[in-house]
Image (cartoon, rainbow, N blue to C red):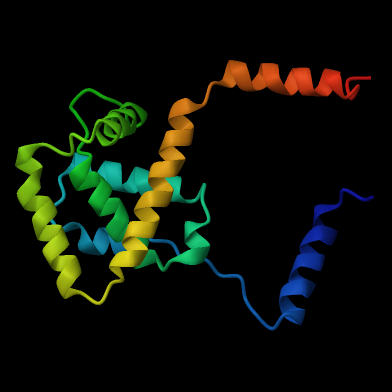
Amino acid sequence: MSSDTSKLGECEFHLISEMNSQLIVHHPYRSLTDIQAQFSLTPDEMSTAWSVVNDHYFTDLPLLHPPHVIAITAVFFAIVFKPNPGTTQSQSMHNAMQQLNAKTGSTAAAQPRVQNLLNWLAESAISIEAVVDCTQELISLYQVWDGYNEKTCKEQVTRFVKARGLDK
């Protein structure tokens, strides 16, 4: 088997051509910047929303939902799971997952902003079911990341390889 990537690219192009379709994935960054002013996002909230958009590429969401739905979901995360000063994005999402698991919700100060977002969603033509689906998928992703331990994973892979005799 050849490792020539140009041949692989040629095969992919031929496959897409034969299927009479295009594989174009639009990104939600433009939608996010367009709605930033609508919800008066602070720089920290915009940073959190941007990180959520970056993270969504680790899921199937770009293939399942339009970019504006992903952007709204990112805004929802940014408003509900507001980052604390002095924490990194991963620490912020970890804290958000703890809040979610403890069912404490967001702070009282964020409630009017969440309500404004929900009112806006209710009046818009955006599918609330799609936003909920995106939210659930991202929460699942963050839960997996929260429970990930690189050392344990490496140990399990090593045990599997040795048990199957694949290390020879």
